Length: 277
Image (cartoon, helix red, strand yellow):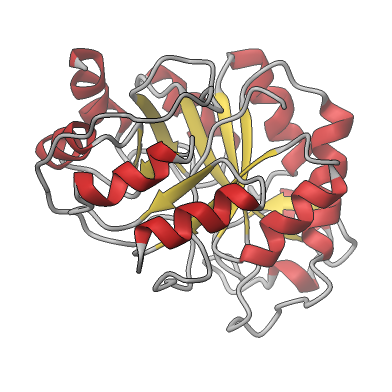
C-alpha cells in the first residue's frame, strides 16, 4: 500500500452531491479510544491540516497559486478536484464550468489553462516539490449534466498518478463509491481510497463495508460527528477526516472525537489547533 491518507463514506450514507466542502460547520465534543491494531493509511502524525481546494479561503480554488498558498499557511496536505477536459486531460475544477461559464468537459485543456485551470499532472509535480500530501477528489456526480457513466476520469487520474510516481502521501476520494472502487481496481489496490459523504447512517455497517472493500477511510461533512460514530471506523482500521471545517473550536471538538484530519478553507486558522494536538 502506498503512503496515502484519506476519507471515507459509503453508499449507505446520506450523500451530498457536490464537492468536498460546500458546508458550514459547527462543533461536537467527545472522546474516542482507538481500538484497532491495524496500521494507519497515513504515515504522517495526526492531526493533519488539509487545505480545501488548495486554500480557497485566501486564493482561487483548484489553482497552483492556491496549492502553494496552502503550504505557506500551514497545511500539510491539500485537497483538489479532478475532472476531464474535452480532449481527455485531467484538470482541476470543482464545478462543471468556470465562473465565466466555460464548460470543462467541452473545452480542451490548453484553452482551460488560459483560464487558470491547471492540469492535474502539474499539481502532482508541485505537491511533490512542496512535500505536501494530496487528496485527489474525483468528480463523478450522476446528477450533473456532463456525468460520464464510464468513469473515464478515474482511468485518466490513475494514469497520471502512476506516471508521476510522487514521493508524498496521496489518497483518491469521491462521493461516488464506484469511482473509488474503480481506482482500487485500476491500481491493483496500490492506491489508498476514501469515500466522501455528508453524513453516515449505521456507522458500524458502513465501516465494515468500506474495510471489506479495501478502502482506507471516510471524509465526513458532519461538523457534529460524534465519537461514537468515529469508533466503528477506528475499530476497522479506517481513518475519519472532516470537511469543510473553518472554525477552530469546531475543529477541536472533532479532533477530540477522534477525527484525524481537518479539511479547511483556512489552513492558517486550523494549524494552531492541530499543533496543540
